[in-house]
Length: 428
Image (cartoon, rainbow, N blue to C red; front, side):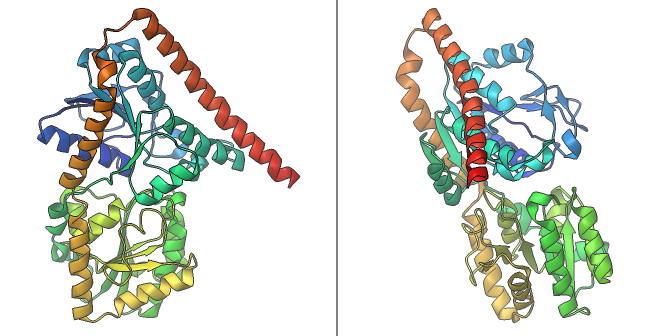
């Protein structure tokens, strides 16, 4: 197959979507498929890249880590057309997502979309954020799904949510896979020695972007309580950076336990694998995820996970088997479970670790890539008859005009729904 993947975030940006696109692209190539990624320009990009088409972009939009792509030039469009793709896979419902819709229509190719993100939880990056904007973002993503030929949901929870919101397009569940061996092979002892973490310290760890939508302040407050429960033995390891880092650091400082909380910033490659292995267990408080990618990475390193019950986490964390799933959204119960985890005997921890590793192997990139390719094959089979017909220039023009009308209708429909809900709230 010849596949074009269109995404608003990609390497060297560090994030779930960027990592997912890269992991699947590499897995497809290893299976003999051709994959080209269309993505915005980012700072510190490689000077030369193969199989990547970059689109000019505004960097660090509104103080975030994201790029906002500018309108696609005719030259970029010609490059994609010259590739003669069999299928286009979009990873966002806006910006380059619109470009993916237009290209798929112009080329007469199927469009697959992965619903990576609960977009309504990210509107604080948009100026003039409001409940109306959040409703608009949610409805916009729903309308986009219904313009695609197939939707991929990273978890069962997301699939069910899309159905509840009115998505009628076929939906398949395919998680983003990981390479379990990569994270199982880290050197935790070397990491502890490098960062001067005592060998007998019980470390609750976390990896991720430190941003408001990730519930970092909640996590920091819970970890403060965990450290205070046994100041001589308990500690925290936080890998990542972002807008919430200053607030999180301040929480530890005000509590007088900042010497027990290590912030390393972003880590990648071998350093990240070593960090995972240096943890005794993993703590995760986000409720806005579509899947538990970092949870799978942590489990591959042998870390049981403590997580709030939410989409993404509930699919991978099995309570008292490979970790703990905390049903309450309050800090107290979450803290109690952190302390519970630290009090397990060596045999109990061994059992939790073994089950965590088994869980991680079930979401390997090899398994998930095969499942995704099966989705592609089914989409292409459904589109096969249409692809075999000789294109009619007038029909092609009508189709493109109709798709343009659908794109703008999608926007107006989402806005109308958001504004109508706002009026209903005021009346109610």
